[in-house]
Length: 358
Image (tube, rainbow, N blue to C red; front, side):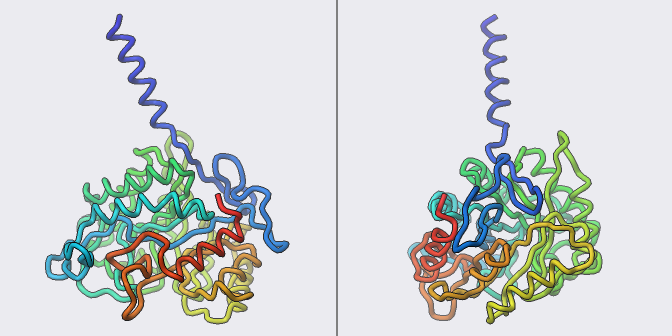
């Protein structure tokens, strides 16, 4: 009898643990977390904040370089060694601080982003092997981040592919295999705080045609068709800075991703949002910037503010620029995941002003 009771309690505890703490949903063009609109009731300078998904590009949370010839480019300044587990440790430790300022979402990518900010040159960073199978060490690091995000009620926009790394998959079959494996893994883990971004900037230098603008909607639809317990993932993809998404993507995407890179005039942000809402097939989905490397947070008008005024969520993209120190940037590797630089402070302080913090 004691063994039966122990087994029952174990199953009960396991079932309770398996229940997600955070469930993201979209209703009437707004993001909801656990059945309530984000930033519920919040306005800022007369502009609605409720329902937005304020985010930052933190794509390197599970970064590693599998190329021994380039790996030493990413050593930490104190130890003179690269350590992927330290990178994830420090990422996870910083998450509660980001959240306290009002950040309810961030972008990760299974193939990262350029560890120099822009450009790719030899490094290999991919949670997929050449046939699209998942690498266990990457998954261990990813699970730690997604688990902590779930605990904090944060939403993770999880990108599957990044240009400059997709060519490490041998063919289209491998790409499809990677999509299926990543999606199945998310379902198996029970996460419901994950939004899928099939690939970062589908119109930029992808080798595989199914990842390019004309066909990427096929992968969006493929992910949407998978379900478990009557639940499916919400899916989209992004384009390069300033680009308005095409109808084939807008018609099938659950939310619409924009990038503000290259847009120096904040008025162009307003225009990009308007043009996106005018695209054939747009049916009222939330619009989300999840990459914009423009700052000016101390000014009355900037890309962040204009996105908010247009009722679009906005995402901060920062990297270490020439001759800058370790504290700068989130995409550059090794990354300082804290809020120590003036740019980071500028963003997070403006974020807290707009959202009221969390």
